[in-house]
Amino acid sequence: QVQLVESGGGSVQAGGSLRLSCEASGDTYTTYYMGWFRQAPGKEREAVARISIGGRSTIYADSVKGRFTISRDNAKNTLYLQMNSLKPEDTAMYYCAATRSALAWGAGNFDYWGQGTQVTVSS
Image 1 (cartoon, rainbow, N blue to C red):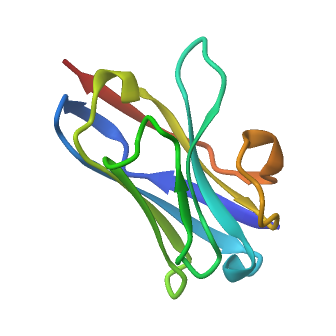
Image 2 (image 1 turned 45 degrees about the vertical axis):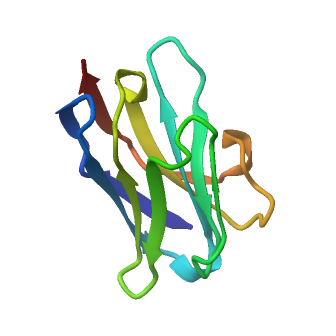
Image 3 (image 1 turned 90 degrees about the horizontal axis):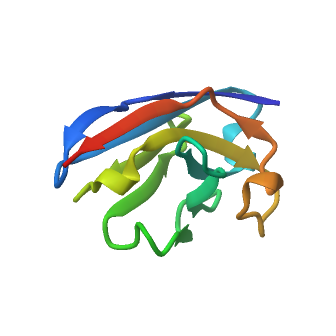
């Protein structure tokens, strides 16, 4: 199995940017599709972005398209989420997750999770 540790969260004003990182260890990172999820208080965990093993294929939630970019560096076993033009509604705990399913999107289809990193956007 793979172990995941997120970092890079923080507090920013609306319009600002943050870059989240997720470092993987344990199992072979390059056998996993990776995703970013977020969960705000009182809400369900939602998928934000997903990336293929090689990094060439990405999928985004409509709410973040054009603002967020998911990427991965397989040489460093690290996943990234560049978040620009942040809005107060982006405030949530952000999680990275791993799956071996090529079709996975929802949280139920991912097998391994990090502990999360908090992102707070003020207006």
